[in-house]
Length: 114
Length: 113
Image (tube, rainbow over all chains, first blue to last red; front, side):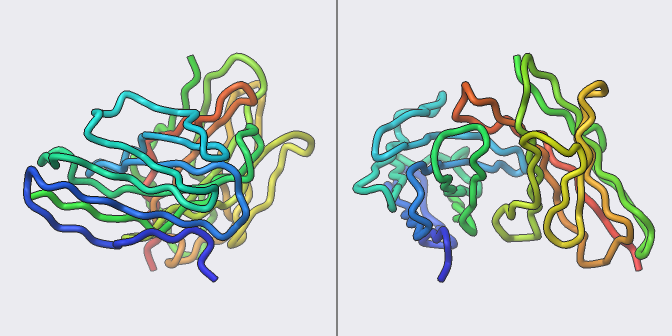
């Protein structure tokens, strides 16, 4: 009964490839997020969806494209991978977008671009 | 602009001693404040949050945090540290007007036996 799950856990790929990371939450939440954590452990919000609608779209290269087929899923597709994309990517969800809503995180996907 | 500062990159505490991980914030208005913990090679786990009311908030694993509006701080505390508390701790804030969590840079807590 994992609350927020991500697949794969590890992803090693060559520069220029296209890859996807999948996220699913079984908490019944309306809002989902993608974060990037760099090698210095800084957390950066990338995208957020509320009820399948994009509500946060930070300054992220357009090689990154989120897709939310339904409220429980938020996938991240990355085209033409670059060395600088190597990081840990976290998915999270919250009940809604209110300031009081707690975000719950998945275990992360460690992406290594060679 | 909203911001969160964690002034210490690393905090070292002996097992059994009290621990404090500091967090200060800058915001116009009333923030909601959160603490998360990240164990090595794991995701972030929610510890506690301050919404309103009692300034002392109790959370998971025996942690608590005190909201101090005058000092704009939300320090994380535990009366007696365990080696298993060693991890990376993040403070974050959010406003009603913003979907985003504003994150601190994280503090590495090391508990020595």
